[in-house]
Length: 447
Image (cartoon, rainbow, N blue to C red; front, side, top):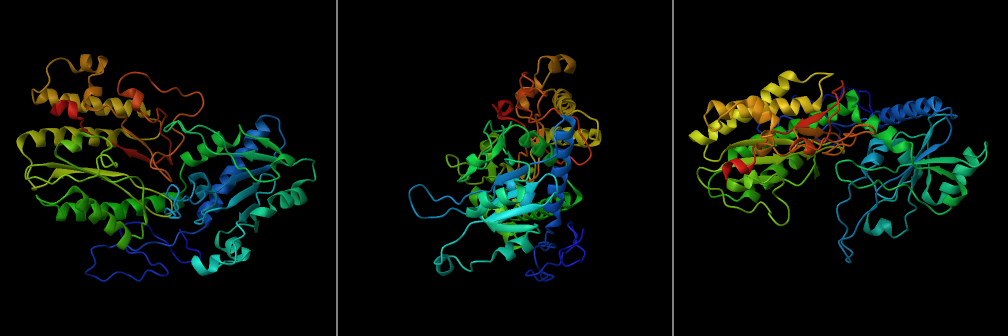
């Protein structure tokens, strides 16, 4: 990888040099330094989208013309107040343009591959309250696009530059996220009625581009996982009976931000101990990581830092006092056996559902070996007994979103059987997929 200045950029276990981040002292709890992420990452994402759209349009007998137009995220206030929540860019927009700021639009010409950013025209008093008002040239050069204009110029710019063949065609992002069931929001702006629009093509094509990660993307994901792994180890070292779960959360958040430059987390931290560790998405507002850690508790820590939009998702379990009891070690080893079996089996061409069933089988075999279950494991699998202990899916695609999109493209149906219905994908693995495998043991067993 190369940085914008041409120097080597390495994301891994070795220290990284980065403008604004001096190397940490030898006594630092971290061996990592936040890397500079080259905007070539997002330029490459745009190139892959253009190539995919050209191929799709040509295959359907349509000319490879038109503009991709995306609307970035907007800042949100806390309900009716003037308190601005910390902004995080809309994920598809981040994937294509890498823009940190709110209020932007972005366009890509399918014929030429040229890219345009449209920045909000800020009022003069923005400089007093929020800081420097940057010129358009700053956004063009920083985000490595071909042109930059203001948002209120979209209609005129598109008509002037792309109206040679009649009414310009805009490909807008609209489609269903198969994890949330929510739909992406297509771009809208004043004067949009002057253009033809297509709402069906862009979403599946762009989503499929996001499924396969480039080497530059994988390096950023690797860094997010490396710094998050360090933070998990720091939590493990400092956890003691008598502490609160939220204190473990704070140790993690401090480490990934202080030493890793991760201002955002990939998802709400799950710092669960005792019975809470059997609740899959513990840590929300109604269960806010507030239990006191007891001697003999198992802890389940599910936390991941996010760096330059790209996330991590790491779960680990251990006894708070550092010693497994006889029951805890049985369950821990059952899950470890399943984990190792899946990792050994994972390769391009393997179906995701087969990996999930392999994990179920490994857990059932371990429980039978310990005489917790009796009977034939094949019969247990046929009766979907594995879903009692692992009602969630094995894992999910991971990237700019914790549950990255693309799990169920058109034509791929979600299974309906217990446990399998929770799978976030049943695709066959391909080189370039990045998946967060998730193996937990559900509370039905504890009950």
